[in-house]
Image (tube, rainbow, N blue to C red; front, side):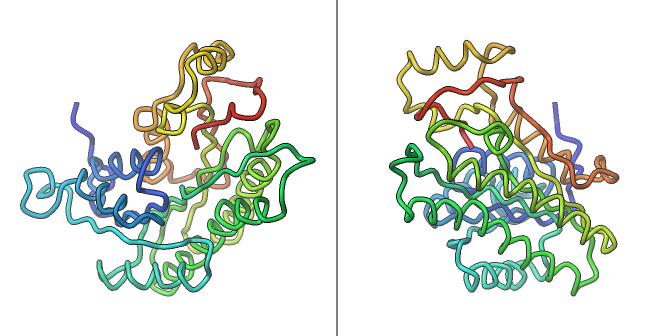
Length: 270
């Protein structure tokens, strides 16, 4: 069934758009009519995402508008600010939808986790969300535009997980950051919400041994992993659209009600 094109006039910036959930979100927002600025640390992966979206001259691109790829390290303040400047220069407007999906893992038990692995995960997963959100909010307020900011957290930020102290802390921080931003930016007509995926089928989970996957799936009440486009991206598209116009500061769980988490190596696909 065709999408309702709820985002036909929107420009969406998606970080971490080169694979997994970020790519699925980019595809879904484009299907809803948005022009997509796909950003990733891997510039070639971002370009591949844009190719999948369709471009000017293609049958799909004609209805979806233009899209563009950007290579950025979101953990660097100067790079995040430059990204917003590049997006505005390319599309002649700031993004009205901003999805922060860039994230990394550096798993280790507490006793053995290095300071460097802690710092790297916090820098990308939490500081990166802050920097992109700050730059985007400044651009929106300066232009007098309303917008929807959607930050991809994780259920691990709410319930924790063995071997992921850095990841859990970063994703918990995203939830608190989002709630505070929602309070600060509401008067400017800018909403901010977070999405908390559980175990999602992504390239990361495909690399796991089948016996581990079977064990994890057995702990999910709905009996299967989530789909990045059919489950997570659906929620993001809803939060990006005016269908959620009175929702801000919310944390939406997309988990299949997976409440019990395994040890190191059994992590969410976010």
